[in-house]
Amino acid sequence: MHFLKIFAVVLLATCALAKEEDVLDLMDHDFDSRLAEHDTALVMFYAPWCGHCKRLKPEYAKAAEDLIRNDPPVALVKVDCTEGGKETCNKNSVSGYPTLKIFRNGEFSQDYNGPREANGIVKYMKAQVGPASKELKSVADLEKFLAAEKESVVVGFFEKESDLKTAFLQLANKLREKVQFAHSSFAAVLEKQGTTDGVVLFRPAHLKNKFEDASVTYSGKADSADLNEWVTKNFYGLAGVRKGDNQREFKNPLVVVYYGVDYVKNPKGTNYWRNRVLKVAKNFEGKVNFAISPSDEFTHELNEFGIEFAQADKPRVAARDANDKKYVLREEFSVEALESFVNDLLEGNLEAYIKSEPIPESQDGPVVVAVAKNFDDVVTNNGKDTLIEFYAPWCGHCKKLAPTFDELAEKLKDEDVSIVKMDATANDVTGPFDVRGFPTLYWAPKDKKSSPVRYEGGREVDDFVKYIAKEATNELKGWDRSGNPKDVKTEL
Image 1 (cartoon, rainbow, N blue to C red):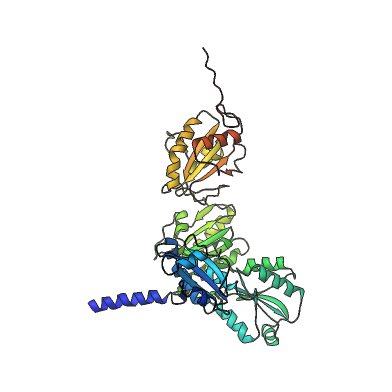
Image 2: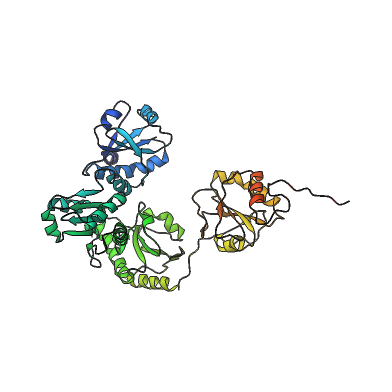
């Protein structure tokens, strides 16, 4: 038994190392020489203790496995800035971890600003090498190109120069970081496809189904804008695979079905549920967008819909309408239940889901407490200019701001101004308020609640008072427009 335990540990360690075997580990003494061997390389400068680095490393390794086999190949490199790579990191102005940079023939080319998931890294880096559209010189090239891609690809077939070819190449250059393009003018390829001036979108083999064609041929004008619209409309098909790196490309109204989506470990099971989604999606084509998403990758999003997902559960369904309101299918998943849910969504028969804390029984403190359920009452329709803080209970800056906010609210208690706070981790933030960090503060004038302004000023009481005195719809009683206290005469 002891031997088996040791063997298991060694085996696990070997597997863990094997996952990173395609990532080059370079140090000061070999960075310049080894990097110069590669036409294109992505370098991750990291520190072993960095949490973001630890999360990125497995995604980086997965991407390396794909990119090292790309034509042309892309090298993925890592440099430990705390040990053997200190000098290299200093030379490349690394000030935070992880820092990613693109190098060409050993020379710095540009900072990497792409996704941090494996699929996104692969797509972004493929776009950095070679032309925007890959030339296919044989039928074998076409078949190899189609077989290698894990997402839809767009291929142009052109016997000679044409307006369509010009539009195609323009679009390829514009979308090179999002979509894989290829083209051919070779007779055998054109003959196989049966066109001499056309563009075809091919869907990946693993998404083949009986509800939609495996390829779609463009029939619009020879115009890059029209071609772009066609690619956007057809790229993900009736029910695309929505993941972290592409989630923003799925537009509302959107119905998402969450389950164990995994085309590597369980393609049959993944398609079993997707086919049921497709059966419904086919009936609503052009009215609602559909997607499937891996539940383990979207746990946070499921929580935003109040859904606790267990691995053994049937798929769970959540939706957003055109106004970004949220809805949840409460029944057990079935084709019939999904179809009824989408019909009710389109007809406005569903009650929107609102993530909210209970409405406070009293407002005893100087700062008004907003929750999602009372937001309209205490912010939108309160008839006052409003300064609102969106905070997180664990946020250190928010905790530091709390006594200042209390003091400010106490100072302004007799003014036509409301000081409000809301826990944005426990309540939905809706409307025009864009919260991406904590604390986020907005100034919402009473007559312009639909156009609040993000507050970027100082965080001391006097800073807030001066700002509010200047911006208030009506001049404050106690301060002039410059934020100076007004003289108060005492009657004898």
